[in-house]
Length: 305
Image (tube, rainbow, N blue to C red):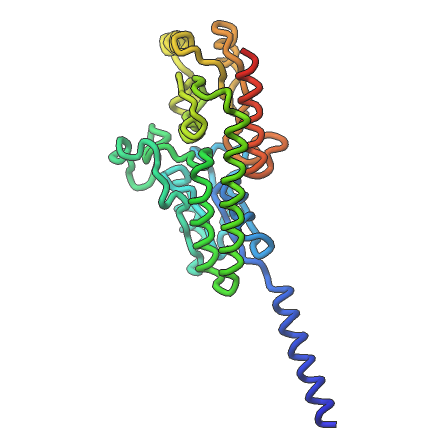
């Protein structure tokens, strides 16, 4: 009888342990953008529940915090920032949440930020004034060569917050990095014929993308978001397009069509809808499909000339 009760007790304890492991709540992770959320899901898998603050149709340079987003951060264990002064508003969001358990990671750590040196003196208390990139260009996720470093930063954040699953995070990160290496080679093949091509863009989002795919930037129509170029600046931009034989205009989905239409009419440059974030348009729901789309459309538009 005693042996039977002991056996039942052992099975009960095992059931409780298995149930606890099976139904353990996922680690709550909040990110500033969809791009970091996509990579966090790759590294964390089913062990994490990820929420992004800034939607794909919102401008992270000028973002307003909502009460519901404060609640998300209050419930989170990890917050992943873009850094490089892009999501300067995240500091106020985190402070408003008052979550003493929250671990905060700047995902730009270890990444060489383009233009950081010349912008160093423009950062003032973490807030953006007239310069949308006061700490250099923060759109580093648009360079495939930066994706492994982002994943490693996220891996380290998840391991620190959830040591019990550290090995899983490390394994998934390694798988992600290996997939990036393979995908980058594929993306370069797709866009290979465009190497050396000059582009024009709505905003200075594309420095890392152009670097990694061998493109050059002939001009930008909105160095400051939502401020259209003057007639003189527009004439100079058209002159640069002709002089550098710029072939493709990278137009972000939320940008106005007016100036790109003028440039197309006057110079023949082709307009390419170019989302700079995951989910910016249909069928770019993760980091892989974003670069699939960008390289495929770049190749198609280059071939049109």
